[in-house]
Length: 414
Image: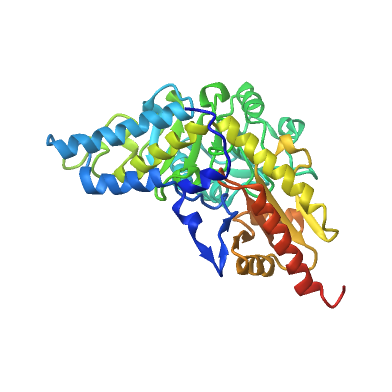
């Protein structure tokens, strides 16, 4: 069923895109923040609550067995989607942030000591910075930064200069949520591993945009959220390589993650269950499974080409503005469908507010990347980010609305 064309008919699969905002059809261009949900995902969640609602692994009655099958088959689906060796390497969490915190507290903290170093990049989302700052504070370790070059990319030579015997982890995003930069993850991991450094990959922006193969990449950890991949909120994934999962300790205690409890001590269940305390998000796993199945109808490679076509067209149309500042790589093959910009002398929030009047949803602010924005020399930016349902006509609408925005704010100068 792969290679079904990504044309405008795809929009019919997403109920929310039938909405009108301020009398205009909704153009949703904030997919880096969260993606809209196809009806197949919505229906799967409703179906779970209407027909299968039960807890998992705690009953021998029919509903409990069905819920357990839905939950564990979801783990299998995730493993296949990211090309993991098996479902035992897949831990369900509350999202990317939750996944990274689990690695920070459950793996890094026990393995760090004073003077240890963690390498992060200047383009990281706060979710891949703050957990390492907290871990460093409690362990005496240090967070050091891999700088971006003027085009918003990372030079491998700079990484070589940062590496030393004190570095115990490299944490890096696969795709920047501001610059759109696609990092050379496989090459970066190879360099890190040659120096005995484990690597965590933040794949929140990558999972629905580029092919991911954790076995080929050889990453030690990889994190993403369901809501970034056309699935539900409240469900995330942490992939952990077998060798690393054996080194991790649980950071949450409770039901589901134990095999035996005595008055003073407990024994953990085997991984990955020992990291999943409490009632699991079964309905959300059901929705995530359907979202991944939906993407496989088209194929990630075709989705990536679709986004490149849209990004190339958007850059072409943006060239009609003299007073626009664009951020990120110039080469289309080096970037995903994420494009941040500013209209000179206008605040990003003002731009986004006018666009909303025309039914166009874009993000404005620092996008949880204050370190990066400070390096860029700006307080905020406007951002468009494409998804599988976006089409060229929406870019035309955006450009038309931006020209009206320019007229509103620059009228006294024209």
